[in-house]
Amino acid sequence: MRVLYVNHTSRISGGERSLLELVDGLPASVSASVACPRGDLERAMKASGIPHFVIPGTAGSVRLHWRQTPRALADMARAAWKLRALVREVRPGLVHANSIRAGLICGLALRGLGVTGITHVRDCLPIGLTSRWSYRTIGRWSSLLIANSRFTRARIQMETTRAPVLVIHSEVNPRRFDPARLTRPAARDRLGLGEDVFAIGLVGQITPWKGQLDAVEALAALRRYRVQARLLLVGATVFIDDATRYDNRAYLDRLRSRITELDLVSDVQMLGEREDVPEILRALDVLVLPSWEEPLGRAALEGMAMALPVVATNRGGPRELIEDGKDGLLVPPRNPLALAAAVQSLWVDPERRRSMGAAARARVLDRFPLKTHVESVLGAYAGLPVSIRGQSTVPGGTDSMSSA
Image (cartoon, rainbow, N blue to C red; front, side, top):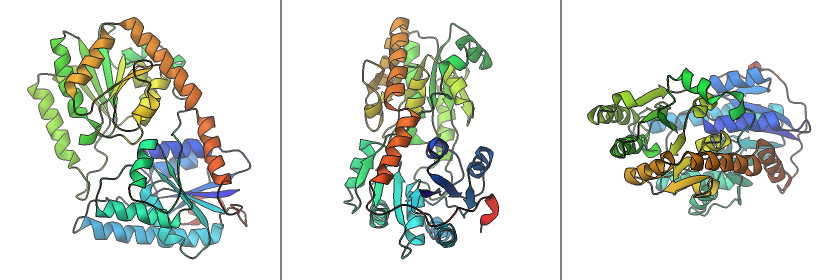
């Protein structure tokens, strides 16, 4: 079985980590290669010894913009042209697009080539004309759409796409996210946290819908409960071009201003984008995900794997990951007081935190291990209506194609 994976960006976030873990976990019977732009993901492929090819990238947004939208369309056209030539050279039996944008590129590139393709949908696009066009376009060329949650599938099906939609939840790597790798005192010492500090963490890009402002407001409310807490914000402003849905730079400025207004400067640590997320999670008492509408909530899986109780909002993917009251708590979105009350209920009961964290890790290891994810994806491949066996050997090396 010969599979070519396509990613529209080389910036590594949740979808790219999932791709790396999927390809690394495939059996020897699958000959996998990856097409992506130059950058972090390409370097990660090289470090892992995964055959890969360079195509142009795109940072296009579904928000229409007089300057950025034409540029994004031109980027996708260039990427599609390169990918089409690559597919003719490599002759994969299956092309697996790892995102909606990659799916749009593949839709252009594979037209008339007779190659089976699927698109992995990891985002819930805002309702609008460009979103509807995007979903319908990937649905026309894909033999199958993989959604990362039932919540994401429901959003896709609102647009009545032609392709069937299969839910495969994302995975967590229990070897990387293992609390036994580092002691809690050592993890806290790395971050300058004393044992008397109640550490709350939020992992995610800095953008309004991730709810960092709600977490800050909840921290202020916790002060009224006399909770000596510190909030650790892990993440950066990833998308900052003019066509991005939110003005993330302005949101970051507003976030910092609000922290100052509430006199929380000494109680909030803004750690930026980090590679040592497992070590940071090990230092926490509680992980929060106050997202307004989370497609899945990969950070929740990672926190649960680290035996942390997770307090997440009840709209979106976290409802499918967390059993409320057993291995985490669910609260309404955009409600800092509810978030604070849930966190405070865990602060006053250390034994509940411990038992909830243990149940969370057990649930993740049982339902969301990497092995199960890989088997589910391979099962999806096997169920496709046409043969997905390639015709020739995949050439190796990063320089089989060059970026535009």
